[in-house]
Image 1 (tube, rainbow, N blue to C red):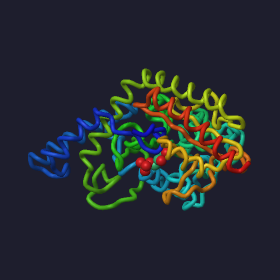
Image 2 (cartoon, helix red, strand yellow):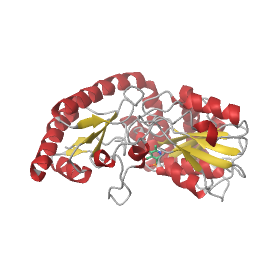
Image 3 (cartoon, helix red, strand yellow):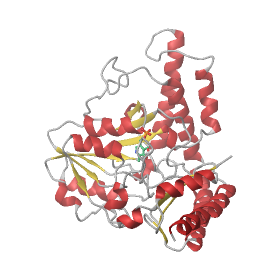
Image 4 (cartoon, rainbow, N blue to C red):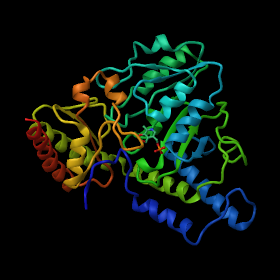
Length: 373
Ligand SMILES: Cc1ncc(COP(=O)(O)O)c(C=O)c1O
């Protein structure tokens, strides 16, 4: 089996999620919008999942909107908040935020060298005419955690009418989202980043916030997201989030120690390697670095052959690597950014995964450097 160090891309399903989903993939079924006994049982499962998600996120069940994933949750937040005001986001957001912000002719605010949003530049971008400010809780490429409470305080002061959205997709496995995002009006989650299934997510929409739907139809989710519920997915998301929350401290300690061993070992073994992201304000599973004099693409091919699944700071859907907008915003020089490597750990990462990477990465780098020498 390969050493899987790409949990920021997707995670294996937690057994608790599988167990919760299995009945809904086999004997049980039903359209939760219906009225008869089979439909009511499906609705009860969705509502129970909603309560679990709400408990984990510190909101009311009625504030949880189930979506088809993180992308839809982010799009619903950014496009759903009514105008005419402007929208603003950080320069290191996921494309699921950047693209809808661009579609609304929004603005981006820069970050420092660690990827933290520039709180001195934010006031100039936020004012009474602002409708929405979107700043993620943790970054998918470098793991940096944003000072969200400071962002919220600043927005409340300068733009009392604006909504604050946070993409908590990468934060949810590691951080207490309920506390850290307590001040946000909209909070996006994705099932498959926390040991749940792909194709399901959630958006917390605080009570009283007006939001126009992206998907119109049967009026599910209190008119905020039409479409027949993905019952198995929703139940799996809730089970995964329940377990991620219950075991968070233990997993953060274990995985954080694995990550530290990996990062320290790689820096010691590879001359010209440097970590990217914040040194302390970053999620436990993230180990992102740049390696001088190598190309990410070639490195990933060698790692794949050596049985190590990793990724670069940025990949697009076609699998081809584009320049990372995150590293660019952090002003990492292009020559360094070209050799970016993202190793990301998760709930089931092991010492053996770290051992495999500590062997394969320095060897692959040495091989590539020999080839150009
Ligand atoms: C920070 C962030 N936001 C949003 C998404 C999109 O989530 P999904 O894959 O569920 O659409 C991702 C996934 O890569 C992500 O890392």
